[in-house]
Structure formats: structure tokens, C-alpha cells
Image (tube, rainbow, N blue to C red; front, side, top):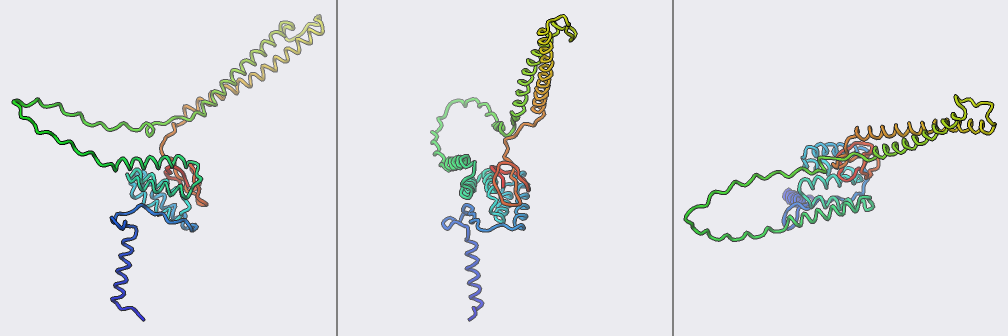
Length: 305
């Protein structure tokens, strides 16, 4: 038995009302926190490529401080490939910069639920606690204003006070404007210095042996008038000194090269920045790591996928 036109209209209105009400708070009508559906499907190659495109578009918006658009793109990327859990870290950072700490906490908690054994789990939990504390502090009601007593009329008006100085913008965070160089080049240079000192000591010892042998056998020739034992000892000492000079020279040269190379490496290297690491999107199985991986890269605010 078919439905009448009126029945179709009523059913359509009910369906539309249900769709419009989906995701809204039943009490206040406000949008609730984002609900990330369970990841029960495996992304196809087409899904991963589409997710890569959405990620790259979101990365461009994020770099332009358009966090709302970046969030839209990154949500779409995670919907297409829900195995790329590190996108939740990107979403958390974008929400935090947008000022929506509740959504940032939601994304971080979802990430820990889906990656419970992640190495930086403790750091993320502390970050969640700090965001919740900031949210609670911001929600505290402002203190009631103190009533002002009525002004008492006076004979003469007081002189005008000096204008208050203009508020100065807060200094930029040193962690964002400066960086530090890696200590590895200095370690290399220090090792080269030690090698150079050892090599110099070995060379000096070899030179002393050669000079001692030359005192017995001038011009590297021993007189046949010398006793055989003195002649053999002088020759052995001279040969040992020559060999010691050679070894010491090699060690000294290696030390000087390491010292110079380490210092050159240190002063030519760029200072590292404390900006959020980039996210790498792998074409195969998604993984979380604080380094760049094959695929495409963007700003990863805690990991990569």
C-alpha cells in the first residue's frame, strides 16, 4: 500500500528535523564537542590520496593562521583515513590556537585512546591537564565591582593626573624567536682537541728518542768503534722514535681535522627552532613519530602520521 503525498511530506519533515538536530546539544542547542567515529575501516589508496590533498590544504590554511579552515580540512583528511591518528594532534593545536580549549582536549584524549602506548603519552596528559586548568580559570565569574562612594564636593578641583602610559605588547616568547645550535659539533671538536694533544705528546716523545739516538750515532751512522750493544741500542731507539713520530703525526693530524671540522660545523649550522615539528603523511600504514617520514609533510604539533 503506497503512501499519500501528505505522508511523504510528513516523513520528509521528520527526517530533515532529525538531521538538523544531529550533533546539537538537546538542552542548549549548542554544538557539542566533535565526536570522532570508531576507526573500523581500512582506507583505500584513493582515500589516502584524498586525505593527503585535504591535509596539504589544511597545512596552507594553518600557516596563514586560518585555523577554522585548517580544522575543516584536517577533519576531512582524518575522516578519509582514520588510521592517521597524528592528525588529531594537528587538530588539537589548531583548536588551541583558535581559543577552543575544549575541542583541543577532546582531540588529545581521543588520540591517547587510540594510541595508548605512544611514547609522548605523559607529555600529552600534562598538556590536557594544563588546558583543563586554563579552561576552568577562564570560566570563573568575575568579582562583583566594589561600590564607589559618592564624591564629596570640594572647593577646588584637583589638578589633572598624568595620562596613563600606553600598554606595551608583551615581549615575544624567546622559545619562538630564538633557538640553539646542536651540541654535537662541539663534542666532535672536543674529541679532536683531545686527539691533537695526544698526538703532539707522542710526536714529542718520538723526537726525543731520535735525538738521543743521534747523539750516539750522528748523521744516522754509527761508528764501528762503538760496542755492538750500544750501536744496536741506538739503532733500535732511532727506529722506534721515527715510528713514534709517524704515529703521533697521524693522530695529531686527525685531531686537528676533527677540531676544525667540528668548529666549522657548529658555526655554519642553523640554530634549531622550538616551533612545532612537521607532520609527515605516509602512503602506507600510518604511524606517529616526531620526525618527517615519506609522503607529504606539514606542521605536526606533536607527531606525524
